[in-house]
Length: 164
Image (cartoon, rainbow, N blue to C red; front, side, top):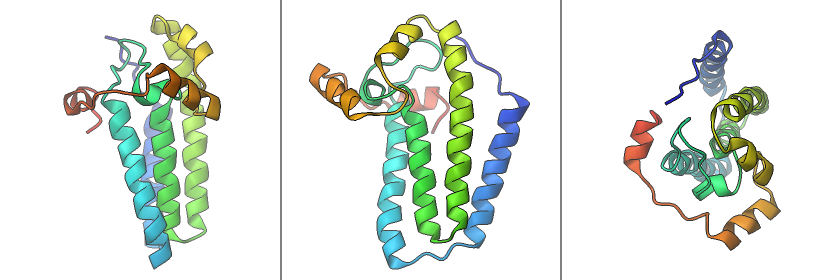
């Protein structure tokens, strides 16, 4: 099983993101409407990451079922959804910086991940030609038409992926 070693840049990025989240909460001014929109969106982001991890077999095989039928990187969709939810919950302009940071970091990591997966995971180049990075109406339609959007949820697989 292949495991890419996190680079120093990745470790620094995670540290900066954690610092940004905790600093942002210092300035949060949640309102009832922000809570009404942000909390369900937060739950959706967590759910996306959980469901994604229940099918993924990291660096072992190409996952094509579940959310991976809609797009190649649903975990990043979940992370971006979480950042948007937190920004809404904060109800402060600093939340926009948080969204920008998450999207910037996700884009940077996506490029590195794509190179690694094309070079090391058999079948990934073909999957890359068939499925977009993020979901589109066409990819959602194809996933529903093919039935690949269905997947069993496996808490065990989440633990194996180290994501719980």
